[in-house]
Amino acid sequence: GQQLNQSPQSMFIQEGEDVSMNCTSSSIFNTWLWYKQDPGEGPVLLIALYKAGELTSNGRLTAQFGITRKDSFLNISASIPSDVGIYFCAGQLPAGTALIFGKGTTLSVSS
Amino acid sequence: DAGITQSPRHKVTETGTPVTLRCHQTENHRYMYWYRQDPGHGLRLIHYSYGVKDTDKGEVSDGYSVSRSKTEDFLLTLESATSSQTSVYFCAISPGQGAYGYTFGSGTRLTVV
Image (tube, rainbow over all chains, first blue to last red; front, side, top):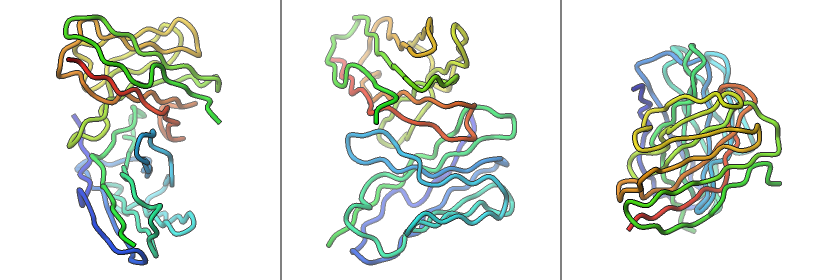
């Protein structure tokens, strides 16, 4: 099936550092979304992107829809301990099928 | 702010027994999904529903069946549980197929011994 390659798999950073993670695919996507999962909970939508080149912010989070429509990145600025969790990218193919999820990036923040 | 609830939250069952997980929504969304989450695999789609009695298979549907007799309820059944089905199961809902993003439940942790 279709795959999203999400990297890095895990990150260990100090509080206050900036974080960057990305997703790539060999297929074109119409929509890119980024989710965060806290321990013991379901993923929660952070940012949705709908147009190639679109750059969207949500507080300290910034995400971009790649120009080629085959990639997206998520940046977190000035990380804090509550940023800890698993971050997932997800995309929807032009056929309008169910979302495809990346394998996640596990973020650990030390204070 | 539930809107979507899963039950049970935790379950331990024996190999070979049938198991049914329930997802209930109060949002009147058309689409409902069942995913499983496993280390190293992320979220993988098991089955989804696009209306009452309308369902389709996902990437990892073998060994699972679903039913949706009412808009608000989507059931996932493991006919004969195996150890490989030990996982965390998430239900998700959406008004459309995906472009609006999904709202996830809190998950069911299933252990098959």
